[in-house]
Length: 375
Image 1 (cartoon, rainbow, N blue to C red):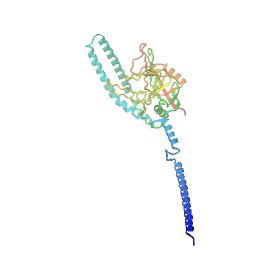
Image 2: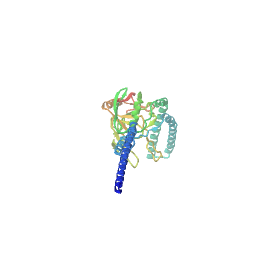
Image 3: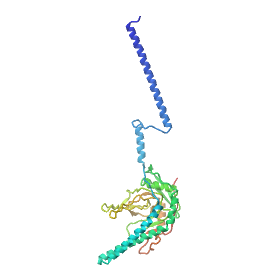
Image 4: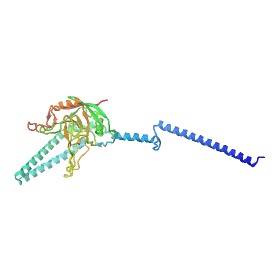
């Protein structure tokens, strides 16, 4: 018969064996759970999914990659617009504005009767300048009305190109291509770092062949007596009216990297002027500065497809997005096109030696036969 001590020893041995079995079972369960987790991870990866564990060993790497992607892209707010509907809507308002200006001239002329000397002379000069501006506006409205059939055709053309999404737009890199005119090719480079949203618009329009077989309807030559001026060829409106474009506008991306010609004036709200170097490609717009005196809130973000090619250093407010530049051969060709001269727009006075045309249309028509990016 076993003694008490023997029984206690047997119990201790039995308990030790039970503990060993429990530990072995626990190890098996842990190994099995790890294997199942591994299968789940493999399945998720195979399905193109992942679970982000910010505190895990891969978290910081993933965060860094996401931050890098964000730093290399921007979001662009492309606003819808209908240039055809806008033109039809604006014409009556412009005619009313002209009529109101005519009334102002009549009232001012009546006041001249009460003036004498220098005051009367100054008043006459102001009335003359205001009347000439009104006449010019009226001729411009007449040209727009004449172009309505071509403007109306934009509705069909604009259905062939869709507005960019505006998400994840690259803010670096360049795109090269060729703008072929009836006078020859102009090589160009678009630079996303200078105006990513506007470059995105042009890349979209070029891919859709939006500029193919379209006219360049504006040429400026600056004043022969001025120290600086505007020396550009303007293109990009399929209607040739100066009011056309696609079904959206691009956000303003004003260039801060241009050489300053005259500084901004905080007292007057003026933006100053900058030098757009020869060879520059920039986006035209119809922006208007706010005028506190008249209560005008101003207009912004109106750039779209119209662009200008600078053939000589030009002085402008820094309000026009710079999207790229021409190559040397293209700039040489552009200078040759510009040298053929400027003709007055329809209805405008003919040029005289004392008053040459500095803002009109190319004397010899210029057409973009194609515009394409290098593959």
